[in-house]
Image 1 (tube, each protein chain N blue to C red):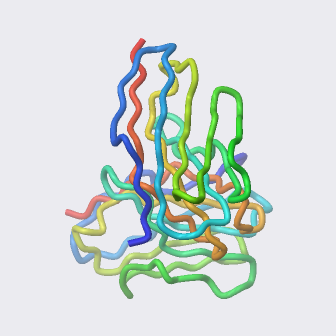
Image 2: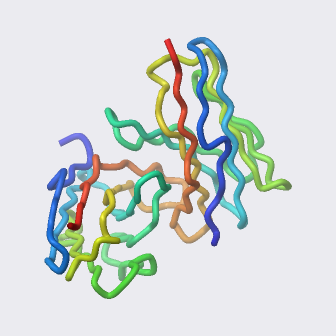
Image 3: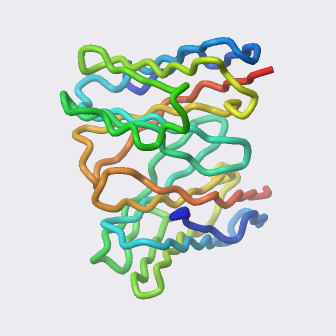
Length: 110
Length: 115
């Protein structure tokens, strides 16, 4: 299977703490994307990092990519209760089909 | 509307019946995707439409599944002779041009339950 893997499967932290999620993939990529899914807003695109980039920031989000290890991490700083959701990485090759990981379930406790 | 819409939001059907799921993409988006998400799982690609090109059907799990996109806009996913393993949330997404770096915008999904 080409499906990527994410760890941890579940993460529970307190508000204000940082949350780090990791994603590993198996095939070469054009880019890797992170999405958030919760019951309120559905599946939402967060950030895209291209294969020639190593780090990218967007607000409280920081994404890194290590193509030699075929891995990526998503860091959420100063977490809030509203960050509670499932986070998915999706690897994009050149064929327009995204291959999705199984997700990390994040709970941010007030 | 401003986003991708899907209908119905929930569908309960009996094994063996046919179902149709509808997706209205964002106006102007030429690419449309269907995915399936089983409980606690990531998304499984089903089919991709881009403009007038032949759709990429490589993710359809069986010949009971089909999809069409009329007029380059609305899409319908049809599942014939539904089975219990078809129970899942079916998600539709659209993007501007279907480029590999395009952001995909997702609808709220249709939760299908096959009894």
